[in-house]
Image (tube, rainbow, N blue to C red; front, side, top):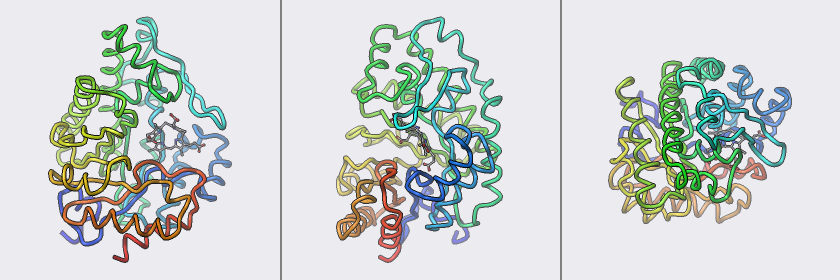
Length: 344
Ligand code: 1CP
């Protein structure tokens, strides 16, 4: 058992004296070495599709901080691109995509099994990482959850309230559901290929799950995640899955049981005490330090890090931020967080 990587032990339900730690967006613009490699690649998408450089930026935070897990460097929007959507990034603004609003747009999308043509370089990145990571570091693959990916494909960009996706859901539910179905199939295909290439864990990012209420949360957050988890576990028995229905609130309760996920990642809008009592009681949780502490630092960073590890100390826990680290973060604050977790 002690030979097994810490992240995998927590995911198997073990309560550890010191939780494994990694960080959402750990390869990113807050690191000078990332900015240098990104400049070498030219632009963000070239970085994603150049296996040597994508592997390099994945390894950078592991070298610097010795995190217990590396997360493949890629983006959730590569799946829409592989399905045939146009994708580009506007500097200082974010992603832009061609939109899906009509049956004709939907008919123009490629079938799920055509995604490998575009995504083959990502699998090569995974193969390089499986060879080059330190033996104690777990490799996490990932994809966006269908609802979150659909919000970008429908709006053509990030949106504060996912308005266009909600509108399509209400006005043309068959088209909306056909799109979710295509993304679900592509996600199963994509994550299976990542696992075959060497990913040891996969994470589903449902960043916009919080805007789905009631029956919609069941139908479009819980049900697609459950299908993806079941399909992956049928093809790859024992593969652990982390689900992140961000800002689900009460929806976090029972989410793992209902989807078959091994761990639920928590954002920082829920308190660690509440989550320990209501979510961690049924299994492993990941989270949930406010990423602002990586900018502000100081005594509050150390106190809050300790409070979170203490709140989750009676069950399986993976330490992480509640959302991605921001480009204005201070790399020294990340080291302070790692030290506070490991020196308990
Ligand atoms: O200029 C740059 O370097 C681009 C910034 C960037 C980075 C570093 C983007 C654009 N994507 C990424 C990498 C990325 N994205 C990873 C890699 C590994 C790591 O975590 O270290 C991962 C896991 C993602 C996942 C992702 N992309 C999500 C889900 C998680 C979350 O943050 O909620 C989402 C919503 C995206 C879309 C996306 N890609 C990039 C941006 C700026 C966005 C958000 C757009 C928006 O505002 O809606």
